[in-house]
Image 1: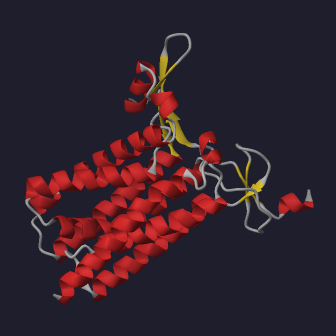
Image 2: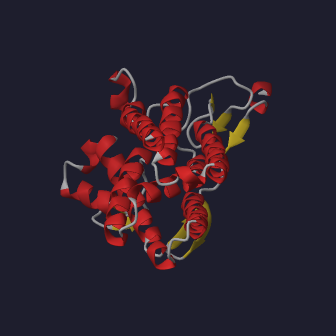
Image 3: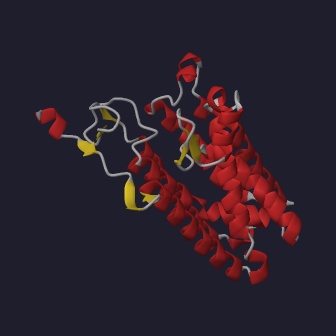
Length: 279
């Protein structure tokens, strides 16, 4: 019992409030807060660069849909293809925020299952469509989004913490969390590790853009963001439990496998930006 008192016992209510059929969860609030922060930060960057307001206005919709659709499809395809891709019921549950009940009914459950790798890919595709419409430089847009990304990524991981999901492996470190909704074992708070890392990323990139504004538009900030996030993600996976049983047979887990291409792209973008500047 004395040992249990050394750890942080974690079991918050997932719902912030409930009105009729509608409920606001902490996870949803964290997502919303992350989007609002990123929105305000990128708007400030656009104003600093004297980009017209009418070119900024549609950006939020492109980003919101790209991240949400990409994150949802990424989770279903990469982590639970057997549940979502083998029946029409699964496909509908993948695309719609509902769950079909055994008695033939259904209930609103939200999108329970979002993957950051899919969200990143969805965002990149959405931004490509955005620049096709606005005729802005793709590298300028990607760099601006990258500078603000850490703030949103931090909020999302705090949402995972409130949901007691993406938990860490058992440990005896003094800052371990006991996720009561999962079991009574002290575990690494992997969500908190990531949230702190992404908050640090935001402050680093925000400070660097003040000192090196000329690098915006070269792809350097985008490359740094990808390299930092997914290198950290690759390493932090060693402290986290696997999300799906099939990962146990892999030499590295799915999160690490999916991180490698993003690390390579990030390093390439930084090298390309360096060559462009020296040319």
